[in-house]
Length: 337
Image (cartoon, rainbow, N blue to C red; front, side, top):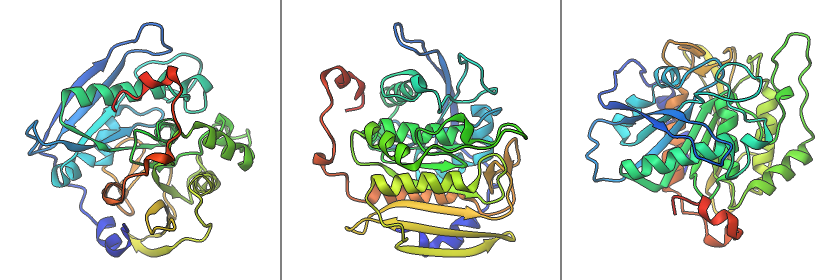
């Protein structure tokens, strides 16, 4: 499926319409014996949710120095959820060990980004808890995030490719990168890992074919450079055996902000990767509502993300043989199947 046919209309959608559903605040309790902590999270139930009809679920992860309540406001996903009929989940990092910036997900820390452990494992447990409490379509699970939340979204997609249908990264990084890939200090140069190493790490993490991924990046971002998104795109093309040449492109200008979109389809015509770049926008959510780490200028990327997810869930499901068997100690990790 393709989103290029109506991309201009998507990117120009009004963000000011107030959501009409309701939010529920919940807590994931700490699991004994695991490298895990209690996690706060909010569930948004869209207008029209009846508790009987299974709906898609979108998980949205906040960035550093931002809360799950703030990403809910700036992303404006609730308004789209009312219209399209899906549930949104907003996890909070809540607390963490080791030195890092406030509210940062530990996407670069080994024990936080491996299957069945740490923060990425807690995110799966939140999915499981929401699936028990609400009517969720297990074949239509999607994850997205901003900055550190985007990097952790990529970690989730890599580790639980048997769970997530698709994902989106706004100013995120490739799976396996170190904290040096982010410009966190003026006089500390950015350093990326070799692409072959990142390819190996991603291949090792995947238990099924890589989920569909939409990458969103501003060329003017000073914290997460454009090259970081190019590396992420390259690793995903390698994992999905895609050509470096896009199968379809589009470009334009929304609110005086130039943008370009490229999508990559496999041999069956299924779009596996989308790569959306804008000019002149600082680090943060693009075209969102007013708030911390958000710019109201430019194209509405939330609409693009939701359209990409919708197109992904309409595509054919992955062939069962694409998933490698899980070893015995991993069987309990597939809590949704």
